[in-house]
Length: 255
Image (cartoon, helix red, strand yellow):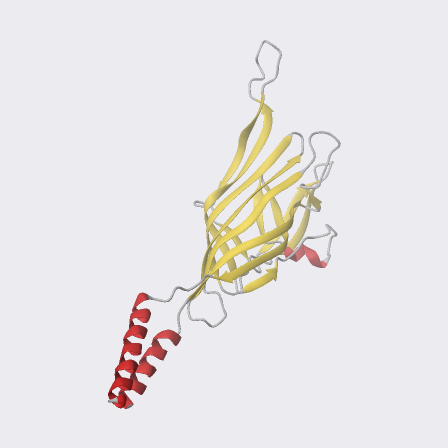
């Protein structure tokens, strides 16, 4: 009887010992803004060119709670998506970021991938035929492997732009960063573009775009769902041996 109790206790310890929990990260991003000063360029329309659009924005990857205390300790995230808009010419931003490392209480830093700005331009303006050849061509690229993109909380930023007279306009803000926690949680949200309003500090990050600082805002949700944990084969074998021991004990008592 004592042997059986000991074996049972060992089996229980194998199945209930503390372990790391890995989460799959997904998102439902319903709105994205890129503010230059007080203008969201994703919704700005100068009266010509194609309308703005936002498509395919999502956060993904995995996150880990190393000691099952309900706090995410590390992560590897991706951020992808595309947004088109018109300034002097049609433009589009393509986000393809990876290696998003999370630090609890601070946020996420992406250290691989790119944010690429393309322009729709005539690639052969000197063609004597007189027919333009418009194509999407790269205008600038931010390489996160050489210039890490910090989506961190509490970072000071200045959303800068220029007015029609060339004067620099600034709106100081403090970033909210990209935070992670088990379950489904709201992203920081959008801004109404009003100087001094509360939403200005909801930007995930502030990045440099063609010499001006631009704030990225997102609304929607991010979800961390625990991955299914397979039972190790050793535990199944141990359980089978335990069942055999119990059966053998019953046979001896019956004899």
